[in-house]
Amino acid sequence: MKAVVCGAGRVGYGIARELAAEGNSVTVVDWSQTLIDRVTTDLDVRGIVGHGSHPDTLERAGIADADLLVAVTYSDETNMVACQVAHSIFDTPLKIARVRAQSYLAKSWRDLFARGALPIDVTISPELEVSRAILQRLETPGASATAPFANNRLQVLGLRVDEGSPIAGTNREHLRELFPDLGMDVVGVRRDDTVFIPEERDPLSVGDDAYVAVAGPHVPRVLDVFGHQVQRARRVVIIGAGNIGVYVARALERMAGVRVRVIEADKAQAEKAADSLSRTVVLHGDGLDRRLLREAGVEDAELAICLTNDDKVNLLSAVMAKREGAQRTLCLVNEPGLKDVRTELGIDIMIDPRGVTVSTILQHIRRGRITGLQTLADGQAEALEGVALATSPLVGKSLRDLDLPEDVSVCALVRGEKVYFRRDNVTIETNDRLVVFALKAAVPKVEQLFRVSLEYF
Image 1 (tube, rainbow, N blue to C red):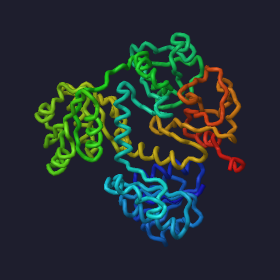
Image 2 (image 1 turned 45 degrees about the vertical axis):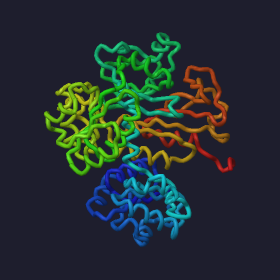
Image 3 (image 1 turned 90 degrees about the horizontal axis):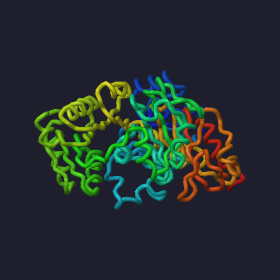
Image 4 (image 1 turned 45 degrees about the horizontal axis):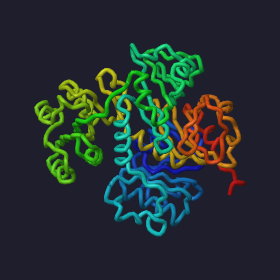
């Protein structure tokens, strides 16, 4: 596949890295010579310095015979015009644009991105995607990672094996013997920063991050088995009232019995948030102010969510909130180098907005019938959901005896409301949904499993 990526910032870099690693031909466009130098030095891609929406720049980038345009510059307007130019002049098949301004995405303007208007095939709102990721984490507060599939019928959870954990030293075979009626399977393990697919008798060790496929109704019990059963937060303090903070607060307002307090440093933004929220108290002030944290009730909070635009403020706010009595903390961190301090600072959950956006975009790029994707283990692995079409080599094979590529494991098969695991005696049928866990290098092989051949059409 030939792809043009407009924008060499964090998201553009991440998309280019993933596509190039899979052997695709990638050209990155950005007006910054510095960013282009970095991306071409680090990655096996071509770089073009220029404006991403200018026809001559796109032509130099090879858009005329490209299969895909991903426009992720910092300007919504540049992204939209780039897609329009790619469609009108070069007839590019697939066009994806990042659109931040919520005004463009309002339901009243839903026809804006239709073929007859702005011909953008997929619009990605980072704020909405990150907000949804946060809310999903709140559903499973004891997990370090959460990836829902098949309309939440299956979840892949990241669960740390702590000192004293009841499952430390057990293996997949032993877990099935202990809990024969529990819909779960350990599909991946990260140990000492190395991710691998565990064999049946590989024991889980203290310090491991186990990636566990779980049938939706069994999630609470699995969290309990791993020693991570935590009640959903009812008292929440949010630091930062930007688009993400307001979206999360509004969603929490709709949940019965949840009390939310929001702290915002910018007075105008705080007033705007107060006007848009109905049951949430918004306080104007610094999220690092201990007095204000106490006024927000952080000492009784079960969760403090730090969502400002500054990584360091988020980290320090999380530390202070926990010191003042908050039971758990969640914060946004854009800078990859800061992820390593999570354990030392006692922060329970970190969410990387760039990683969330990249995962969403990759879901739309994957060939075949990949309908769900979540990057796990800091990008070392992916959980993918695909539909088994009539032409897929999976159809007619036994799930139990499925011969998968190296570094790929089956999470589960979903057929209607029923979830089947590898131990079940079931044959894969057309339109079944199969969820797999794959190390990064094996992802192209997974795509082949769900490929759509010409004979299908």
